[in-house]
Length: 306
Image (cartoon, rainbow, N blue to C red; front, side, top):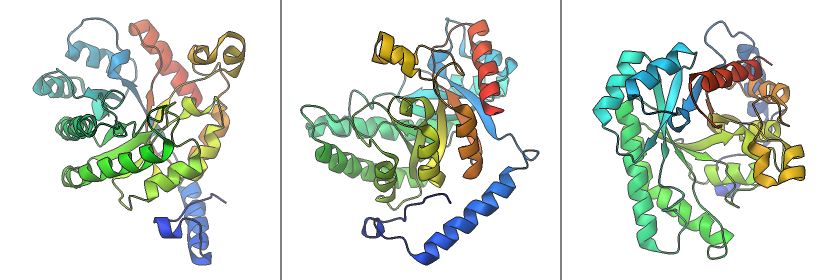
């Protein structure tokens, strides 16, 4: 049975028998439907635009990504790119721009004690929503808050929810979803809490941009996937090695190629099948030239086929 939390803060700790039966039935149906992959690919491959090295025009980068097997790309916003040039590159290459990453969420955090910093963060998120719509995307990836010496956990929780709520009318108007990424920000440290945080918005425009590799340091991504379930809008694909972490230092854990770390891709893919996830899987690993990106694409295919 796939564990699902009910929506709404009042009902967070109560799961009725009717809801449990519904969740169980939905999971069973979803699993059967997911077994047939002839309708569409289980996962569509994408990269973050910052992974593409070099100074070639955007149109050449997009064409190269399409040629080596990528289906789409995640752009950054706000940015200094000409939006019409981005759209022209999209149309000429056939590469989908499936969303954007909020480029100011680490600097102008929605949990900052300074209200003017939070206001700047809201403005950046609003621009990202508009750019995603312009590009034909469906999401904005957002790091919702950062907990540190100056910002307590409860402050980060309350402030970030309040700021995100200010932007929800625009998200609804544009039809662009806000997808919250699990990162090393000392915040939302468990899948149960992440589910609760999302559910408290009581709005389908807020969900998760689940980063598979970010969890491996302290947990198991397949467990997060089953708990977050339909809250997952999209996936970030990366690897992590506990062995390298233990022998060389924490951040060295990321310096391993896809399929060569401690992410159990077979278990991850089974969990995705169990929740009937179909959608974007975007690499967030060190990029480079065509050869390097081709290797990333090949490794993603191997992981996705498990």
